[in-house]
Image 1 (cartoon, rainbow, N blue to C red):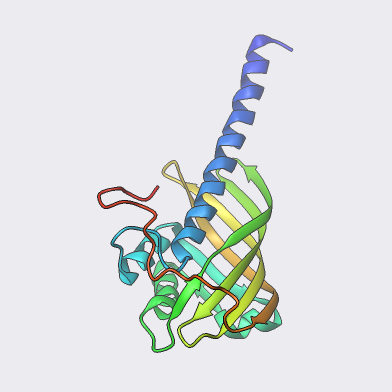
Image 2 (cartoon, one colour):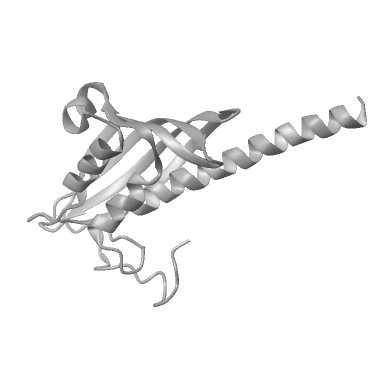
Length: 188
């Protein structure tokens, strides 16, 4: 193999590895922004929604699929609809969600130039102000596009694996707010 061919092959492989790393950070950022309490210093719920919406392409879809998630989440197409979806989720409610943490596993990412698809499994414990708790597991099948050099989600698709009620009091320490970052520090 010639030096030029070797450099071209290595450049293609490096670009794919960089894309995978960017996509991995994107999905982690999404999960981070969906966690409660929000670990972003001083951000209010509306700012959280805008940070989440910014992770998507203009024509993106966010959807729950399958017999359980079709009815619970439906399908949102475009940034305005995705914004409305997350506004309904994060606006203050009487029985507020006080803890939600995403654990992501079983990753598989395939990059094809400026587009990619990825799948994951995630677990989320949810605790509400009234003490009710549950554990959710979902499969994700997402699509990504590079827009002006930045990877964005063009499809977020989630399917229920299971939802299990957790006994009241199963978690003994629930923070009221995140103090991960000191005042003046920015969230990564």
